Length: 116
Picture (tube, rainbow, N blue to C red):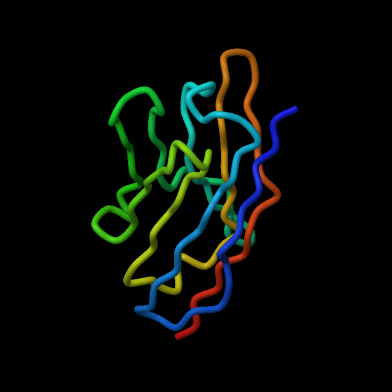
């Protein structure tokens, strides 16, 4: 059973930074794609940033391009999301996601709240 454990969320001021971490219970090269999604109150879950473990391919939501960076530490089975210049609209629960051939996995989520 794959486990994804997020950490690093919290309360941050407008314009501040946070780094989220997602520790996977197995080698990230086992997955076709990994990344971060978020869900704000009353809204649908949306893609934030994803990458393909076996390549350098990344994809970002337009709303976070230039502010967020997804990265990984292969040896630690960990994926990161560096979030800079945070805005009020970034407030949401952030979820780590891993897609394998037959199913996908989700972490429990970590709350990010940006105060104005």
